[in-house]
Length: 290
Image (cartoon, rainbow, N blue to C red; front, side, top):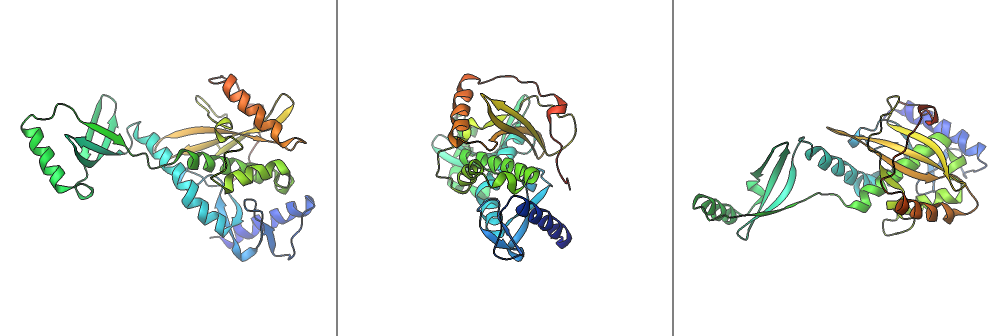
């Protein structure tokens, strides 16, 4: 880790902390933007706002515990989600479980245009099932077979990873002036506790299909409003072999924390499949790209 980069971000966030009216007991501490605990400099770490496993480079500071825990519980699921997206477009393979006449085996499925092929993973399969299935194929005793794709990610976990990244994007833009508000705390609680069902994460996340960014960046922030409830649409670039853009709606500070989330629940049902046009001048420029 570059101490210079860490110190630079620490100094920037300390200024933000002071300007927002917040304080810590000791001068060498910051409030972790995720768990909201005062954390000494040595226990802070530079964390990728969008996980490096999906192309993220920009960083901010969080406590080591949040960084490590979320890498395992959240970011790995986002990476696996994008890996599946890649595989369906001919890059890499999909892990599957084959069932041939009741014999189960593990196989890698290569999904290419006009061609699908299975490659048995011998070390992960029962040798007897392999031998029996091979004999069935040679004797013409296989009319059909079934398979299950093992996606290796949980829907809630990968979407929470997106929510977390979008929140950290706004933290990078607006600092503690945004993070100190109660509505930001609702987002933090949802990120920190996967068992929570509110706010409804499905109503906040969309796939930005057809998004053509006017300039190259890892994330794009577009302010807007719905029925006078102000928000930022944060569009994240998720990239491995292929690229996908995912959008996250996050509320800006307001008097009624629940209003925005209720509106988004209704909006998601009523405007499913809605096409929108985003003018280039509406997109905020990223701060301190690294």
